[in-house]
Image (tube, rainbow, N blue to C red; front, side, top):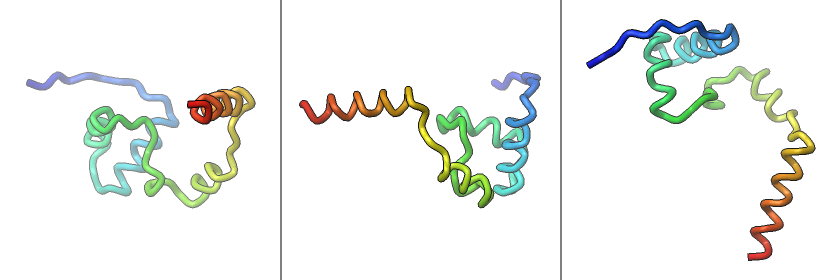
Length: 79
């Protein structure tokens, strides 16, 4: 049984949905239905433009994220 739901998506998410739909030659509805089942909230890197991939490459972790990762690594080394 299916249930019809109407959603208002933020512009950025709607744009991502349409980009993935165009790249994969599917409807936006199909893309939205697939994402939760795949456990993804971000598109695969292969779907991103070159500029978007370069932005990811140049991104840095926040100080808090770096500290958390350092703590996790320290814990693994002690085991």
